[in-house]
Image 1 (cartoon, rainbow, N blue to C red):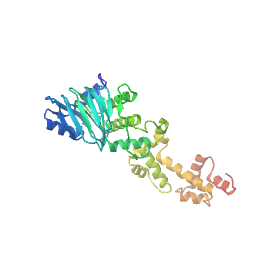
Image 2: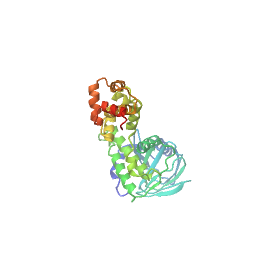
Image 3: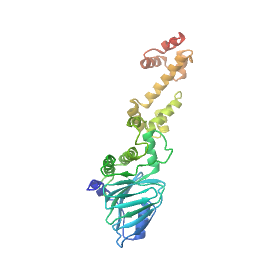
Image 4: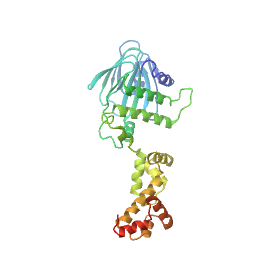
Length: 333
């Protein structure tokens, strides 16, 4: 990420000054308030700290410069994951898990739940991405279709020339393109949300142990959470009178969002899918000997107009409900 690879992101972030100070206590307090609690020890007399960044409702992206060399000892990061990339200078990281040297272009996903010792060189600029674990787990569940049972174990290093690094650079630039410069217009919360989900998803897909080794087709088949929740709700209430608003409310999204997501995944609307579920259940009853007559089962499943029901049934299965019932009586498959 050296040599101007993140020049646009750097220029955007520098429009958002969070801290500018040479006072040790003010610098430590200001950086701790945005990133993490830590102990800060200057290695030289010169301290000219600058912290730039975007503090959004989701992940936070910052640039940090101390000016002079400093030593930093951080507290364990229990509620978030920190990703650190070197733009200029060098930072050495050490903890009980191992040690690393971050030079321009290198990225490190910091170990969580342990204290870190960092040595910052003079004139060092680092880009830091702070990801709340709640948001990380939300994206993980979206990708895998299952909750997080154990802490996510990341491969730590992302070298400059590795393929994941190229994707990460692109997504950092994409995220920053949705941040409003001090003199510009904001892209909007939806754009930022999409950008942060893409960035977190990339880190999970390329660096999370276990997840990165799963075959891509399995990941692509996972349904979005709102679609999965909608399906579960419809299946549990298939014989009840429910509206599209009822389904969307249970899925936790708007009617418009659910309709688009369902159409993308299944090519039909939620209500069309619900009608298909009902017709399939009706057919099972007609074939399985649980219905005495077509009219009885149609009324019970909420079809008061037998003519419309028969036409819909024939369109779906290529035969009338009476034909299905007669085949059952005759013992035909």
